[in-house]
Image 1: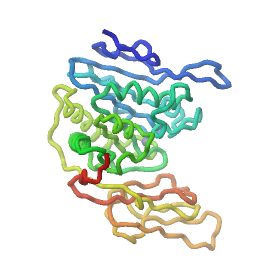
Image 2 (image 1 turned 120 degrees about the horizontal axis):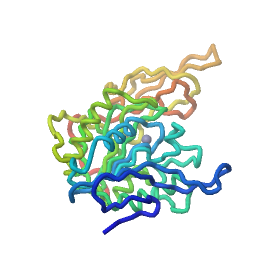
Image 3 (image 1 turned 90 degrees about the horizontal axis):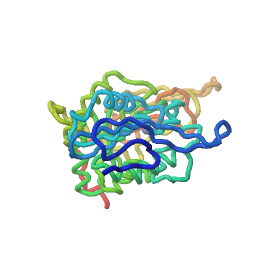
Image 4 (image 1 turned 90 degrees about the vertical axis):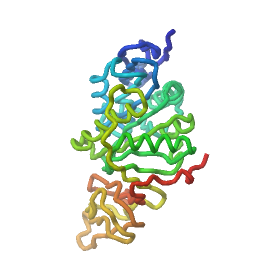
Length: 343
Ligand SMILES: [Zn+2]
């Protein structure tokens, strides 16, 4: 039996072994009247265990996940697996080539575009393949992000709360297995067009991740996540002989309405807190200096609530409305209750 997807020529999704190929989206512009933009994909299968879909490069300027998935493709063979890995390390390939969050080709944020459109632009086509073809094949999904060029996160798993008790329990155990220092929780179905929401709608357990940022690759975060990814694949029962121990306690923090500290002034941001730092409501967390108005005092920005500094803006230059810092509610080592969840 073979299982083919028209936009992914040459890959038999029921085949055993390691297959390398491309997801091809159609594109027409001033230079090419009918080109395709190829996004690399690997399908590695050994045994009949579960299928895990792994994506990175959903935003083009987020690099730890891209490196981790490239490594996974090169290092794993079918003998290492009881199941199937579907790996897309540079999912929005146009944005990856440009080193941008969103590609100039279509200006579409892929992680807001699902379920996409088969007859849409490049990101819309990729979104439709992920939503209609790939997620339905998967028993588990992980989509690896970072803070990109514009911010840096505490190294974290990133999960949408709920949406059901069963999925929430699956996500909690996946986060513990992935075992990076933090888990950032947001409300159920936070962004309707994200891969996380599509997986939640499909009832497929999924975690995302936010590993570092600043448009570069952090060595300590990469090392921790490299171990964590293998531990997670072992936990999901697809990686044979994966090490699941020792694990360290994960610190659960929650980003919600009112977490963001936004600038009301254009200028240069001076961060006054570090990632992972605990702050109290009202603490000064950032200061913005005017560039041209020499007699204008710098403006202080305060923590709207007590908690943990989870995200810090990266480039110093900011505008009115730029998010400077995000403060997350600290739940310690206990995951927030699933009774926040709505179905
Ligand atoms: Zn991202």
